[in-house]
Image (cartoon, rainbow, N blue to C red; front, side, top):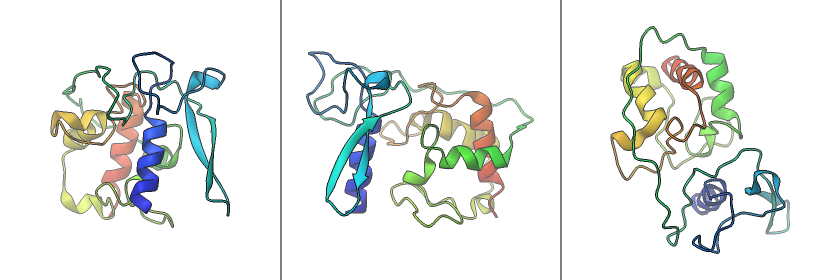
Length: 176
């Protein structure tokens, strides 16, 4: 049940944001919405969803529709120049921000009552002793490691800039 709700949300958020006859009919778009992209809002105790305009332009994002045949940008491998200079407090804010990372949808984060269950748990992340460069690449574009990854390529698609990814890396590396 929870995974299906996450998949509905991901399908809506990662849908293309313009209308085209080549795109599938199940995309969450509306020409009258801000940036033409919609996001679901649960109508409490009704069993229904309402669709509200999404704040970001997601035109470069692929949808999760099997009928969507649009090409996507190729995976990008990047190098991280040290020092990291990331802010873990801003990183946590990004991890919880709906319009940015929204990592909590898929990942379990410390101190949050509604953890995601699709992605890897990041509790005690520091104990894994991953390099900053590895974590940076995973957030920037995880397809460089796994072409079938469902983790959004935040850097390649321009959803997060370099400093925001550095902040997320600093946050993850601070989790004891």
